[in-house]
Image (tube, rainbow, N blue to C red):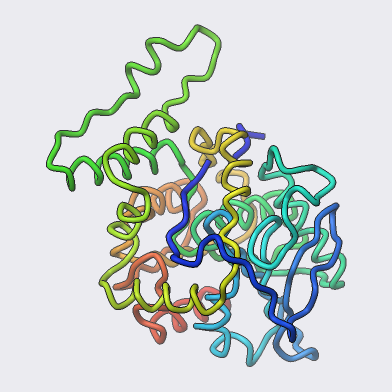
Length: 322
């Protein structure tokens, strides 16, 4: 297993709020954590259910369900999961594993525990952004339980992602790109892993605050950003800062998943937004080259269902049925 999973700060104005709606299901204790999920769609469908794995990390499934759920739920079961410590799931401090660390192994085990609890024979993981990691790793570990895997604007190489963020921050400040990688490698004792990704992200966020930087890279235009912020404020769910910190403790900014992409034995489909500079093209190319992924590029940003709902629906349906 690679170095476990650090990550990105909040982008929503309601990031630190938490609210439980009275008509929603309560979390279920699975794999030592209180996990919130909703299952929608026809109970008699013979299609493998879709399990949505949100990004962030520490975000939630609410906005995707609110904005796109009706387009998904006509023909198959859809499971909206708030990953551990995120959204309407219980806090990390209440898990058996505790709040200090969190790794990819645990997130994948949560998905398998959910599958067993719901009695599904096979499923289709649908991972967005950071959520691509548990989606892909679930398919790698459980090919017999995975019909196919679909990822939207995936993140799989975090030192490279950190360099992308640093380059954008430098450009917006009108400064030359100064990559600290060589200096970090030079001062790292032999035999130790040089924390290049962490140094890059520290440099990036020292130039430009995280929210402005991510907004610049994620969204095609201001209306899309404002629409998502409105939905986030409406949902009033926790952003999962503790999830991010736990992953930081495990060294996510040094995490490189590409070596494991060659192990995938199930079909992989990627839906990418042309205007999502955090994922396209560098992150997407890893999946195309090493996993043989089928890639569809839309005129959209990090949340393509915001920019062109019909085009995203068409691309997702093709990925699910091809």
